[in-house]
Length: 435
Image (cartoon, rainbow, N blue to C red; front, top):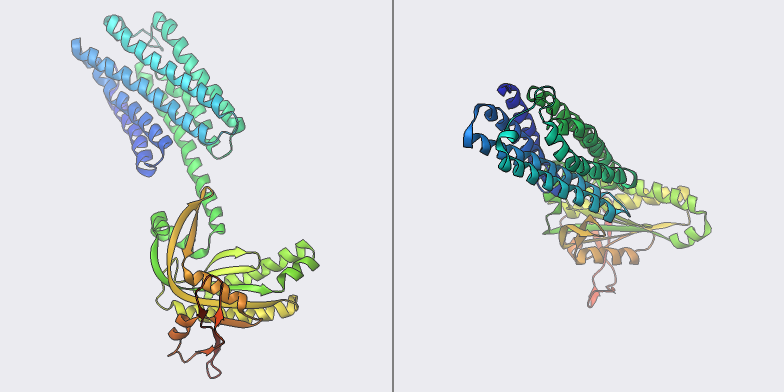
């Protein structure tokens, strides 16, 4: 006789794990397959105590549901392993997929045979053998080879994945599955009173691997944050991926700076020295941008693109961008005089409506700002001489009432990509203003 309370706890544990996978990773097909596997294990555990109290047609229906649930649980478990394997296998994808598909086919045959056995010989199928194992010798002889071959092929596929995987982190869950499988499969044949213990052990083994997998994923995510600007990383942490990916039109200010005479410098010095200089240069730009609310968007050699007002909106983006540019000019000029006097710095600032958000390309997402202000800031930067900060009309007009900054008109210029002449202004800090 089955202990209904033990089976109830097992059903709650298995189904709970399944719903957690659904809730936390609904968009992932592998996770959905895994969730269905656990939910079906939970359903089977929930129905098992009723099997011992039923008789007649009710018993036959319960037996059919139990066998269907266990067959589908095996099928979905193999499907999860198949999808994980295909996502992380290099050259032998066809072999891995074939092994898993044949394994699934055998699992389906096992399920149909189990249902057929129940239909042909309901009394024999409904009775259990005495002792630790509840299957009769005939059942073992007929069903074990089919199910055993299915598990063997799946195990071979997992071994192939294990030694050809691209993503080492997935091996954590695959190894957990390999360790849990003997317990989960053993629950199909052991005496009823042992099923909750054996199945729970398998579930906990796999759950421990899943928790370890999530911990390592989180550690990897924390490491990957170093490749994002602090502002984009903050946006992802506070507002989620959807907010960072949402595209919208927004008026922002753009600052572009690059080094004068850098090409000649790079040709005349060892590459290690050039990289060391760039690293220190990037560090200076990043620290200044952070102080003034700017987001370093791109590094392209000696050129750096900084956004003010994106990804986090800022109503005072123009003045912050100008402060950033002037402070950048001052600090970088001093830095270059010390380490590479032959180099200089030029800076361009532009304000305008841009479209900001994430786009997908080359297999990854990239946060972008697209608009004439980005191109205009880059063109002004190219025109700027050493120690000069150039801006266009929109930025200059926004500074008219500012007691700190002045925009000095320069000769209008024809810039590539822009129709007609573009009004150009040199941005300076007023002499009476505190630095």
